[in-house]
Length: 350
Image 1 (spheres, rainbow, N blue to C red):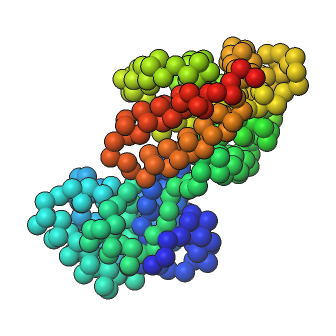
Image 2: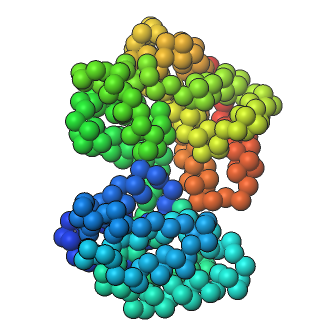
């Protein structure tokens, strides 16, 4: 079946048409939980959920139990929802065990129980393997990721933050929503968590960008400002050491790239400020005061073209990392080499 996005699934669920099964594919925890909740809401009455909603995990070797439950008529309910999570674990099994599970699943999907909605979940599946081909053919495949370039994902996450705030009956300033999306690198689950904290912090009033700045602090996002001076100087050796220290401390490449992209955007925004602007004006762009001072110091020393080309490079690397590159460290090292090319820094000192 063709791949659907979350909004298309929600529209289908709103019509209450029974579907045999869904594959939730992707790593965004918020989108997956949203789909789970709406599927249960659509098909199982609240009073019946204790016995008409069941959950199994492929990591716990529960394939047989999940399929047996899918074929068992639920008690005191016309329909049931069966969740089977971490199904990517099936791909890691030995060939005999893997084929046995896929054969059982094939048999079930050839004649699915009319009273069951089978929800299979995986962060990523190998499109070359039988399991992925079977699920793509027989189930509605829902993409649980925010796709597109980094800036596009930030824009989508900003809109989602505003929607979450409305659902939670929270007043959220538009600038605060954007800052929240940027600081969380478009992570919807984290945005939801941060909104809950911000709501308590604001005490019923509208949440502003100052609230986000005060409460949603990412040490990684601010430590990455050390890199701005290295970029201004074209100091590749120091930049490589900086990258090595972040990776050694356990920081993830995707999050590092998000932090760097955020920094590049802020440097561009600072360059657009009126001449003579001080830390207070820069801080209004969604930065702490000490970070605003660093941005004011380094923004004039880095050519605008270096920043715009750097953002393009970061977007390319972000997509490569999210597509599952086998050697993320090498990708990051190549990125640093690209960002510190002497040619790229030739326009600095404007």
